[in-house]
Length: 486
Image (cartoon, rainbow, N blue to C red; front, side, top):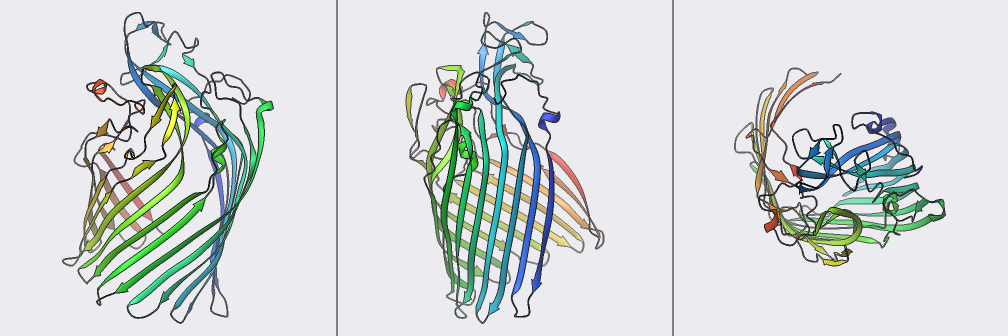
């Protein structure tokens, strides 16, 4: 999309290869006045490539559909998969980060003051794109259709992305952990950040056959000031039982990637207040925390690859801004009934919903306000038993996910599921440790995530018994590891 040239790229070739170099300096220095100076810095230089193919939809091609195999020219009928191919070839990026802080215990106060610096620059980031068709089978083959070129591709650079420039974030912060009394403890802090973002982007419409036009190149230059803060309080009603409250607030306006599309991005300040109230209980045998929370965040950005519900072969990329609101209740405890045995249990009840989610596509208006957020379960559980005996540790993890909506309209969903993990770790000596992990040891099968191409459908019936594209849970896997410390 920058030069207008056509090229071939291999999923396992140089077009999908990245190279990075890191240089770190970190440490701490105890000063004569008792303050502990800590520093951590990193210089990261890379040429990053990204290449992958994303499934969009599946439809049935009958006789007379004029699909042929690209490699043989043989006619093809049956299920056809629509694929989106994306490649960002060898994009130069540089990142410089640093954290500098001083800490000291003064009476009942544990004080920290510090500075954060993060500089990031990218040189002509761009995502070249094309669409193609393939057969639906274990080893899919590229297809040529009536609306493709002779190689089987079409809609070059529809939804393509480009941005160029730098971001710099400079922050100062301070925090205090204050033990007011034997029963009351307060943790609070303030974070002030100056965010500078400057560069250029193209307002050239991302239509088929897009080649960026210098006449549509525009500069941007932004300066923002952000405030963040925290306040946590714990009060022991009894020696091992008490109440806790927390509040966290953050702000942000935008990132360099927001300029990747043609439309001017919505850089309205995003504010995220998070509040919580709960209880805790700690003994030699159990440590428990139970807390209710509320979270709201505005101005989320998402780029959707939408498929016309009336024509599976037609797709468009939309940039959408929306809010998310959720309430939740989490209970987390660790149980130690006898020596060596440890049981961790976590349950979360939540109800995240979309707010201000409206857009237009294919000449229709869509409103997803108050719909449940896709891919998120309303009930989550983790059960993690483990047993340690001498140099051996045996552990397992059972994770439960209630049903997850698979598309934005909430018409389709995946049933609840369990995911399982387990392993054995052995410490041979102080230098060598061995481990074995089994993923999905119950060998369950199932889908998760979203159903591509179904973002706009409202009636689930046409999807019953139909081949769909999406993601799947991790398959049965055995992993072995050796850790050497010297």
